[in-house]
Length: 142
Picture 1 (cartoon, helix red, strand yellow):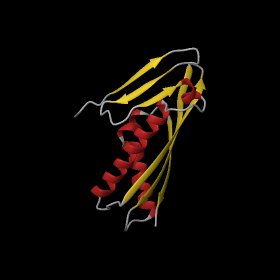
Picture 2: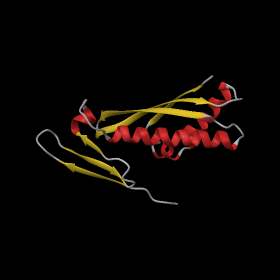
Picture 3: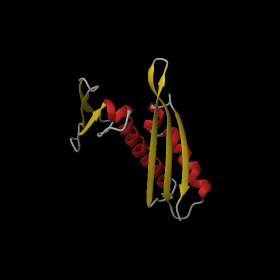
Picture 4: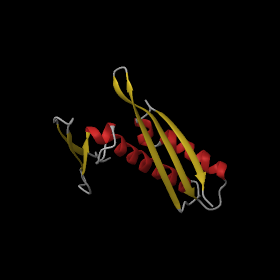
């Protein structure tokens, strides 16, 4: 299996510092700073990127599981809200709220929820983030 990588540069300064994040694909690069992470500054932050990775992994895992069982999804859209809180030893990601909406002809809401719950437990990013609480809201669309 391939190994994926990304690069981050951080330059401390009087305002707390800033830097740049670039995935190995080079498809994008984004800035990040102390303000974009802990306040409302411009740029991205590690939690936002982690949320994007989790939402993408979960959507793909759910879609693949549904398809493998003969339920071809037309669309799966997932949002991941990543909470970072101050803990005794510094900061910690404490909660990730997944919210997914799927358009899958021919299945019930209960079946969709069961597949979503399984994807939450088995997608590789969920497993890597097992130290945080992960919640899930799953909704079948029309």
